[in-house]
Image 1: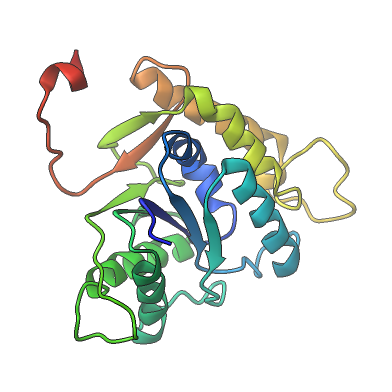
Image 2: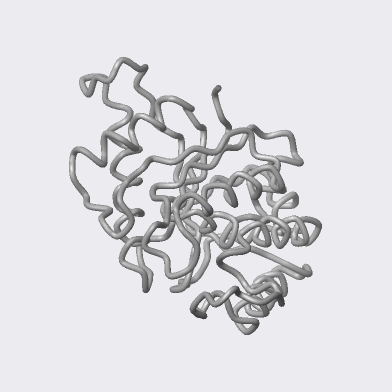
Amino acid sequence: MKLDVLAFGTHPDDVELFCGGTIARLVDQGCRVGIVDLTRGELGTRGNAKLRHKESQVAAATLGVHIRENVGISDGNIALNPENRQKIIYFVRKFQPKLVLAPYEQDRHPDHEHASKLITESCFYAGLVRIEDGQKAHRPKGIIYYFSHHVEQPTFIVDISEFFKTKLMGLRAYKSQFYSGEKSDGQQETYISTAKFWQSIEVRARFYGNLIGVEYGEPFFYRSPLKITNLLENFA
């Protein structure tokens, strides 16, 4: 299946957390959207790989994406090497996306930084015909980066006001990871499992929404200048 947009996440729940509203909006607009997680999140303090996989499938159905797959790279070991690069190339060529969503290159979590570089390089090399894997070479037209913890000045902000509830529903699928108000069955509390973190999701979305005059927004970074053909359509 060819996709319009392919969103890569370092761990299951990353895509929902940082660009879930945008994905829900794209699906609503009729785009073919997929998610590929690099790892199973097996090093996470709460839950386990099997449970997080089940949660990720529920979240994918909630957002309405067309596919969700996992690369299977070891959590905490996202090395920038030919083996891992070839794994990403496989998925880029398999789904031939027009656009790729990827984590921004600067973050507090080393996995996110490594994933950003790996995805960026792989998208380029996926377009080289001399790198053969039995599939047609394909290079996405662009890579759009979503921010996680470290946020720079965004290139643009997507209005997700109509889809913020869908974003939260997708996140609530990860019962092992996020605060739900229910007892945690003795699991160790983490930063993202607290009520404070859950509240911060809305605070962040409101902040970026306010910057563009809407209720909720998600920020993104794009390396190249943006092409504008209609000033009134974009700015008036």
